[in-house]
Amino acid sequence: MASTEELPQWKTDLINLALQSNILTFGSFTLKSGRISPYFVNCGLFSRARLIRAISSAYAHTLDTHAKDTTGWGFDVLFGPAYKGIPLCATTCDKLASLDEGRWGEVGYSFNRKEVKDHGEGGLMVGEGLKGKRVVIIDDVITAGTAIKEAVSIIEQQGGTLVGIVVAVDRQEKMPAPKGESEEGKRGSAIGEVRRSLGVPVLAALTLGDLIKGMRDLGRGEEVSKMEEYYARYKPTE
Image 1: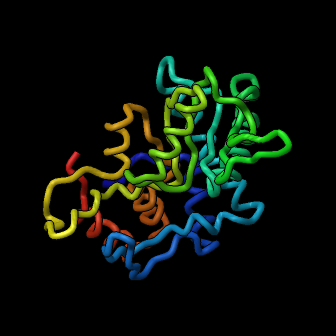
Image 2: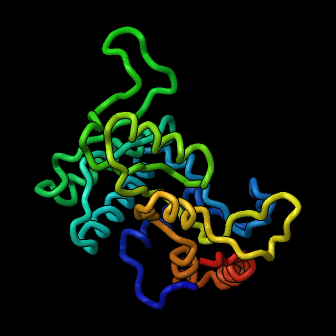
């Protein structure tokens, strides 16, 4: 499950900081799906200066690495769906310019209002226009539900082209079973389903595999065993 290769330093730093700040915690957590998870990542706690700097730097590294590894792939605007995506898209733009201003210095950010403004500059959108632009959605988590569909719809209505999505954590587990069905059925992950349905890369700053590798490097064998057991039970079939 976890790679034997060394994690990039920025991933190691992010995992350590998440542990120190109780963003990454271990125990017994009931998820929305009803599953009992041995770990939980509370992305809402990336709310202080050094923490938002760490997560936005991780997004920037994730995007920069994918662009370097994928010929012809790039983007013009980061779109942050209201509300959680708003600070993420703005701070990630800043970190991208810090990584490589020559390449990323002109990347813009944009976000939507929850309600259309009918005074002042008016409209639904704030920030960079999307018309004719290659757009990456940036958010904390992803599901295959209505939130991502709404973001994609906004981008299309504004004349942009979706070219990718980036989130904080990929739990690498299969989607919950429909009501009345067994969890033992074959299903893909939420990220995998979105990737297939939209036909664009869906990236994550950290995966469950990264967390397992990071915790193993820290000598946290008990946590590693529980995460590996959880993955074995809910491994996606994709």
